Length: 192
Image (cartoon, rainbow, N blue to C red; front, side):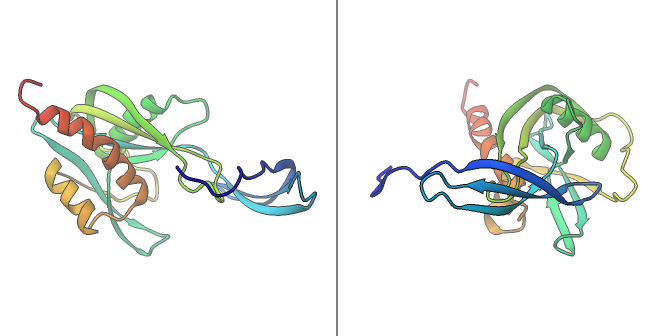
């Protein structure tokens, strides 16, 4: 990485106050001070719990997908299963739980693929991306009060094509697929 200037300064966090509190997030006003300019500014920060998204791979080489209405975009969205991580809950355990609750699927060999910051400019949470292998439907879904989900499966390569063509637009789902792609490529190699 080439840089034409020195590293930016690390602002000092001074304090915060809650602007609004909702059932899914708090909106904060956070005061920061720039160490060199000695200026202080308030910035809006979304304080939300961590999330999990699950790549659930069947033994037939298909991914478990969910299609649901999303209020933010006022449209339907094709995604992988996921949801909110409960306070103190392990991200992998949360992924296994969310997969079961949203789809009725369970699997083996659950593991963390990685974690991302959804939007570090204004959010303080992370989304953890979990792989669950040998996914099979083992029971009925247990949706939250406002959830209505269509569950389906599709071949991995088809899902990748949907991601590349814009049929899948959820950024965190695209992150999950991007982290899963090298795992899938290694599986397809002869002798693996």
